[in-house]
Length: 111
Length: 256
Image (cartoon, rainbow over all chains, first blue to last red; front, side):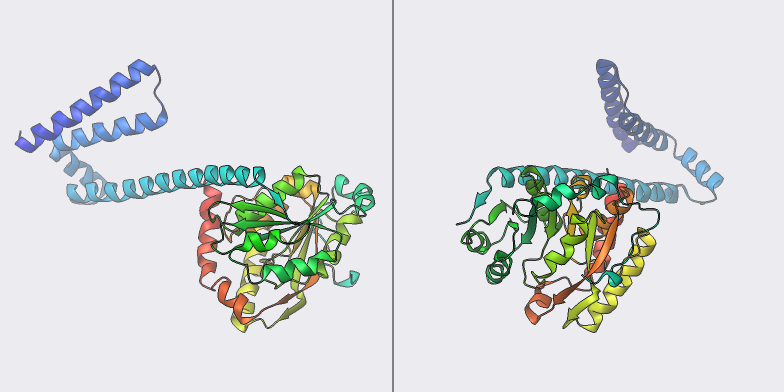
């Protein structure tokens, strides 16, 4: 194992343990946490066994393992960007409602 | 109102029973509280005075929603007797301002709500024409159409763009309308309480049409006059904004 693998796997191991502890404490596994856990596990598997990524690339007809990782990153980036944008839109709607209520409460009549 | 020019509502958008039983609104017409005119305004201090002056002769209650203006739009509006002024502490957009004004009007017992622009493009005389089908129980929503009426001084590029918007709307919402982004509209109380504008900015015009369809509200178009001037064109939407509006509309539909 290379020093990078040791370092990265230690870090990922701690994150995975932390996530599991949270799930056990809350006694609830949400879809979002499950996806996040899968991402950490996938990353750990890819770092621990680069050959496996190469093999997956072969199955998918991509050729290089590095390209599989790159494509996954692009897809993940798009998903995260949309997730964050949706959060921002929801927040803006809440802010709009708050400003609207304030405007109605402070209505004034001319003359 | 020239009846022949009113576009018939869609066959599958029946006039609602509530809209048909509108004599209460008709009876209330003597009461200025029955008809509310909602004016969203952003940095319109120089023009809103004339707009309010023109509306003052009509038996309507006016509410100006100052959408976080940096000038003294609110102060100018408050100088007019009986005009309600609501103020967004930050600029949210025309769609948000319209919804604020509609909420306020509904809370105060409005039977008919008319939306009207603050920049002087609209003609106050059109208000009567807009509210008539609602008071007669013929429709839940009345849409002003500059293409059935007059569009004075409209540049050819804007005309072309609006025509394209009409085709898009017909495809997207299924509504057979001749003008899609006209701020001059009227809603019955029933319609106004069913429609909820979530698009804060200019995509609200398409969203309103979409909600007319979704809520199966009956509608008619009436001819109105829109007067373009160099000042209103300079402040108005650029043609490129059409692409942004399209994006906002599509993304907005995906987020609940």
